[in-house]
Image (cartoon, rainbow, N blue to C red; front, side, top):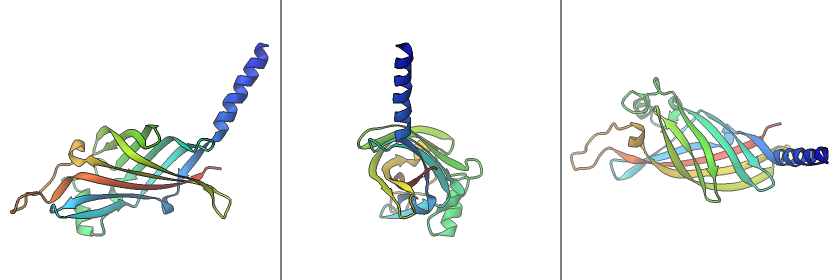
Length: 189
């Protein structure tokens, strides 16, 4: 009887593990984007060109289970080389000292992803809006999952405080960073 119970438990655990798939982020179909206020009146929009990540996705319940990602800070791209060089400098991101930004998912619910974000040597808990766009088979037989993460964070919370006060009042760079992250993952084979 004990052998039968043990076999059933192992079978149940094995079948659950089979339902969760390991996915690699397809960087050519994903985007790590952001925007921040400039001169208090408009937004600078940017992205990071070099990043990687992986996640676990429960295919039976269509639920994100695990997610981790790494962004290369020196790949920041705001379509302005001079501004990008300043963003990489010691006054802001300090890409030489802090070359990576890391995110690790802790848990999800139907609307949010909770995790830790490490940037500029500081790790903070974050809560991001989660949109699960589901799973499909592509024309080449690959299984793909689409996810969107959006939210806001304070750059000052991470020790990124450089700014310039404007003559008319206000500052050159806003504190609030709006994140817009599009992730497409391919099931690892």
